Image 1 (spheres, protein in one colour):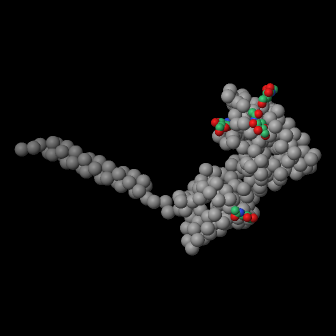
Image 2 (spheres, protein in one colour):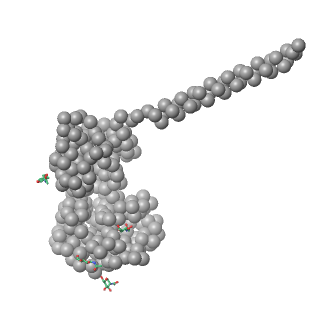
Image 3 (cartoon, helix red, strand yellow):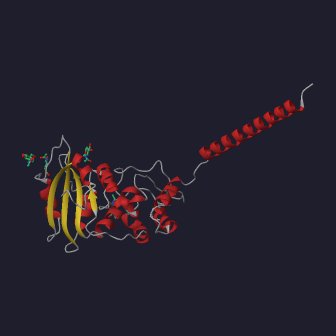
Length: 268
Ligand SMILES: *[C@@H]1O[C@H](CO)[C@@H](O)[C@H](O)[C@H]1NC(C)=O
Ligand SMILES: *[C@@H]1O[C@H](CO)[C@@H](O)[C@H](O)[C@H]1NC(C)=O
Ligand SMILES: *[C@@H]1O[C@H](CO)[C@@H](O)[C@H](O)[C@H]1NC(C)=O
Ligand SMILES: *[C@@H]1O[C@H](CO)[C@@H](O)[C@H](O)[C@H]1NC(C)=O
């Protein structure tokens, strides 16, 4: 014969156990649901989320302008001009004296602009941020965006991704004003390459008197091979619009970290 108290205690135990099991089932279901749910448009999701970080754009409109450049097209036949509507939709305000260009220094330059509140690279603006590090393409006869099976950077000249970077780089350089800075790599034999985007698209768009000076920051490491006297910089200066002053400074990579807390160009 159980006492009523024991009975009540046991009933409470059973109720608690049932509640706990139910909770567990719900949690497992939610977690599974979240992990198994397929994002049908992963590129668009990333693109829109990055665009919205700027809090000043109609991101759906920018996406529509971006997408029309390549959807339904052969991914090797996307001309740079296909992205003109994207450039028009993703308007950005140039910041004179703060624009930072780069070649073969991607990680270092972005670590730098992230901590330094002065300089702005293409990838810090909406133009470059939305697609940085991503791959995408369309297909003839399809209205979809693909993120795999796309041609690589060098597979064909007018591929979806390469034409995008050529177009946005041109827009960024067209807007350059005042003193511009270019971070180049001293650990490679030819720090200035005429074949790079900087050498083939950006440099020739700097125009005097809108641009007054080009400051080359040559990032050196202990194993660096090139310095500012390297002959490739003679070629650079030949390409540079007359009237734009030129300067080159070697800055050790380790020193850049200290520089990032200094005001604009405090190190060069
Ligand atoms: C790439 O497109 C441009 C026009 O934007 C054209 O002049 C050029 O011939 C094309 N190159 C190739 C390899 O198709
Ligand atoms: C320069 O290029 C080399 C080789 O690609 C790379 O290892 C190095 O990190 C680059 N230096 C900078 C400062 O980005
Ligand atoms: C720059 O590099 C060259 C070799 O490329 C070397 O002869 C010269 O001494 C270097 N200059 C400086 C200032 O380090
Ligand atoms: C300097 O530039 C020339 C031509 O642009 C290149 O061939 C040479 O190897 C470069 N590097 C060094 C370390 O001298």
